[in-house]
Amino acid sequence: MSPSDDRLPAGLSGNSYFLTTHWSVVLKAQQDDTCLAEQALAELCRCYWYPLYSFVRRQGRSAEDAEDLTQEFFAQLLEKDYLASVQREKGKFRSFLLMALKRFLAKQWQKDHAQKRGGEFSLVSFDAGLAESRYGSEPTHGLAPDLAFERQWASVLLELVMTRLRQEYVTTDREQLFSELKGAIAREKDSGSYQDIGKRLGMSEAAVKMAIQRLRRRYRELLREEIGKTVADPGEIEEELQHLFATFNR
Image (cartoon, rainbow, N blue to C red; front, side, top):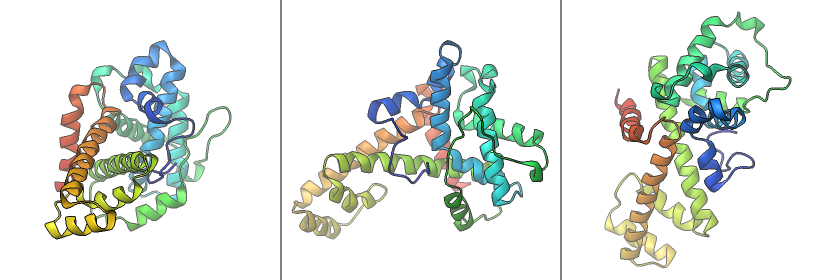
């Protein structure tokens, strides 16, 4: 599943998706319910696979090797008891995943020996063609791999939020409203723009402004929900939000 897909992971929707993809669920369930922890970990990995793929590419690996190594990393992550040493206070899923990937790459054999895993362990599926196309279109600007990873993590996060927000509007037959207003989430529009939107939608300017306020409020709520899935404690949400947005200014 690619981050730009408009679909939730197969078999999951609404509250079930929200509940089973929390990093806090992984940490809490790792001792009591291994199956639940593995499911939550797999779903989180499916959401945030691209920053890892890109990190491997930035280590000088070819596209083919990066695909193999990323898949191998996920297979080992889901197969082995990687979570046994992870404590709740160690915090963010983003930090854990990057640390685990670095350790994996340090121990990995030569790239010409890399191969995909199979057997009883399910791989975290992703679109390798999409990954390489996206990687090739992103300017590098000599960014350090760690900083590039964090920027891409933030970008994937925002994509997930926009996908969820759009889905909510589609399921309530308001897709056209979302299409007209989504550009106003991050920036103000002038009065003329509100009037134009109102004419196309058959709404007053005041109604358009109110709809934009609701859209922005819901966007902020979903943004915090998505961040909440990747931290161990709700109290870390604001700190993680500020950190990720700060990466775009570094």
